[in-house]
Image (cartoon, rainbow, N blue to C red; front, side, top):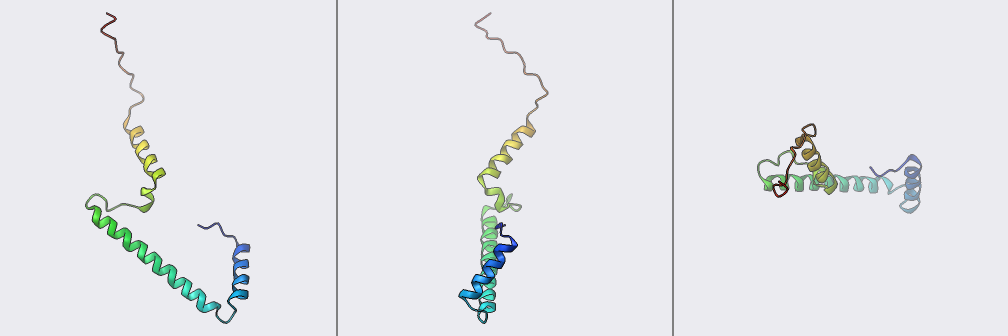
Length: 98
């Protein structure tokens, strides 16, 4: 998700121990975890509220579906799936030529 490797995590722990201190580090980590859980719950609540306000037909709405790139990709794939590329187009003759 954040592309953080083992080395970076270790460096963050060392810097955290230097800045915060080893005695307060567990409480700060627990507070950070609680904050992340609270933010996640708030985001889920907002998502559910949006789904409820949009009404029927949007029960399976995913937040990723609202990304412009995904939205365009979905609509283009729908158009491609509906069109029939194997059918030959009918020749059109301009009536003014005749």
